[in-house]
Length: 123
Image (cartoon, rainbow, N blue to C red; front, side, top):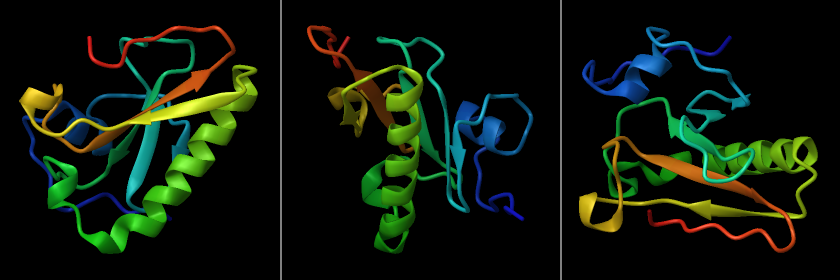
């Protein structure tokens, strides 16, 4: 059974998703990460891998979560590539407002990619 995280910010939209206040379609889940579709996708299948615990940036995350993060990236990316007939994917992760981070809760964007498809990661 997957446990609910203990340290959350109740004003944070991602924390509210993690504790079930906001319903989201789960693409992948393990003990410390959940993947959901992006609310404003830039390409078909654009999804987010979100830390279940509230860390504002990747610099706040303990390195001990690295293995589970890679598991979440692999599981999510493989599923999205299959579902979207994609041939590859991009991983984008923004830290701090100046770098394009909108929600101050660590998350990773996964973009399934098809040949010839153009996408801008910074708008």
